[in-house]
Image 1 (tube, one colour):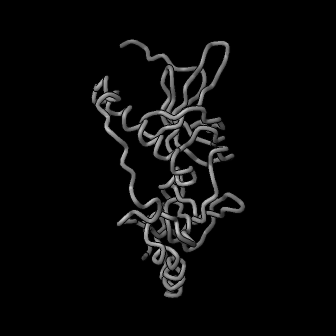
Image 2 (cartoon, rainbow, N blue to C red):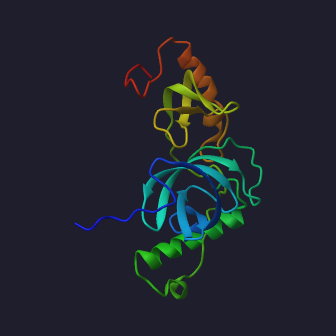
Length: 216
C-alpha cells in the first residue's frame, strides 16, 4: 500500500487559534495557515468571516484540515448585539438578517453545484424567499440536563445542576439556558430557569455523562 502523505501544519487533536477569512458551502468557515511551503486550509463549522476562534483538529489531510469549534475568541465586525442568550445551535443569529440571507443563499447554491453537479444553478435560481419571522420561528427545541456545567465567566467546567444545551465542542458538559435564545417560544425559555430550580429542589441528581447515571 502507498504511504499516506501527512501535512506539516497541524495534527489530529491539536488545538489552534485562527482567523476565519471566508465562508464555504455547508456552513463552514475557512481559515488559512500560510508559510513558505504554501497555504494550508482549515475548515471550521459554525464560524463566520472575521472571527478569531479556538478550534480542535478532528481530521488532518495533506492539503486541508477539518476542525471542531471550541470558542469564539473575538467576534466579527459584522456581528451585532441581540437581546438573546447565545447558544451553539444559532451561530449566525448575531449577523444582520441581510447577511444571514446572503450566506444561506450562497451555501445552498454551492451545494447544488458541488454535490448536485448543476453547473448553471445561478441561471435556474428564481428568488430567495425569506421566513416572515426573523426570530422565534422554531416549532421544536430539545434541552438536556447535566451534572457538569459551564462557568462562562471563568471559562471552565463546574459541578452544578444544569438544564439547557450541550456546551459547544463537548458531549459531557451542559450550558444553562437562563433566558430566551431567540429561536423557540419566549415564554418557555424565559421560564426554563424556574423549571431547573424546581427540579433541583427535588434533590434528584441530573444526568452525569461520563458516569452514565443519575435521574434527570
